[in-house]
Image 1: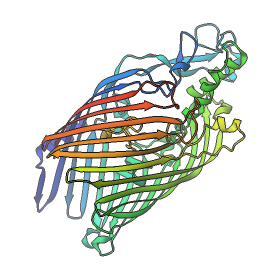
Image 2: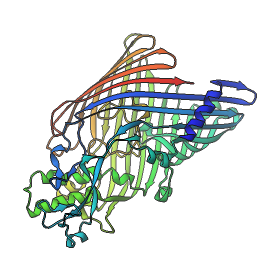
Image 3: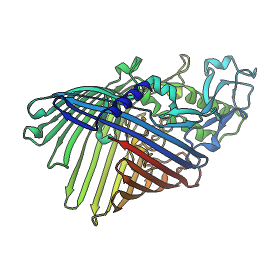
Image 4: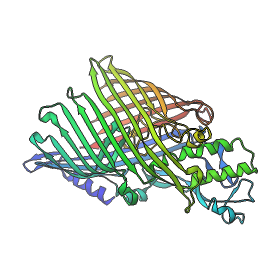
Length: 533
């Protein structure tokens, strides 16, 4: 917070754009305010019911519950140049809100309990079974007292891990017409049009605008530690390398290729599979009778997966193409990519590795994204899009079918996908939402999403955007269906002043056969943005 305050103070003292012989200094101050009301969003995790000493399976992927909250986001940044020297610093609070997390229940195995699980202090924990499942912490149905969070975690933890510092880099322009720019430090990086990575990272990046020399090419390369947290421990061996080459037919057009490589030992890739590892146990438990040997065994298995510390040794590579072309009054944007590699997955429970968490398989996934937009009139634009992120069945389900342990889903390190507002977390708050690694679709099953878009700008500073999409899972879901459902989104923004924007959003997802329930998922967002630069 001290750094953010200092940056803001410097920014207020500086002119918006001060050009002089000594160089140039620019500032940017942003304050977002939001009210969000989210209803019937599916619960992706099976929580432990302390009273029943078992997992609450009825809430799993069920469309029920509500969450309404106020949130804010503040940022302050400075950017300067002097001759060939460049620098920038940016601090922000992240999305700050009050949030109540599930309590953590310490769960132990028990022979006497009808569910096979109990809690320490009951006198029924089994010492003999501790060699199979030691006491583990599991999220339960009861909630903790509300606390202030930033980017989805306690504010203090966010501040300690990031210092709230998003950018802090120095750079230099090189060559004739300053065609090359090299930057070192914490900076914003995008890989694969955001489908692979779009967040802050610590490292080196270079861009080469060959158009300044003649050829219509723009090249880029980066080597960095991905993530907003400063690297520590295994993070120092978890590097991403990214390359791109774009041909520029005109000022606002490009046709390019990109490639990236990532080695992870932090467990972030392993976390992508936690949901898919737990799902088979949840499905199996729904068909078993309590107080049977099989039921108790499956409850312990689910507890091991939910409470385990996941570890990995992941080697992932990506190769693809992306571009944007204007064909008359129509603009075409596309991204296509393949991911390949190998993931060794394990879980540590006091030195014990549950069999359910052992996985040593290859990865091969596909991405296809196409967007078309065309102007009907000066103020009306219509279009359509198609998004395909490949997915796969959970590892345990594939093992039961005698299939290989390979995973066919498209994995991203910190993707920024905003095709729709509910399923993909887009909308008026998407620009400052926390980035996080996520498997494609629900529990890594992938998603196919064809959709339509329309926008209308009836007045200066007033804009309306609408979209509709039908979302499907390439792999059958846990309840026998594959339809995520149909989503319709509407956004309105009004900028009465250059520094003020008022925004509103209303979205609804009509769940399909993939989920446990058919209650419509709704999201309403009201927002105010203040920007000074």
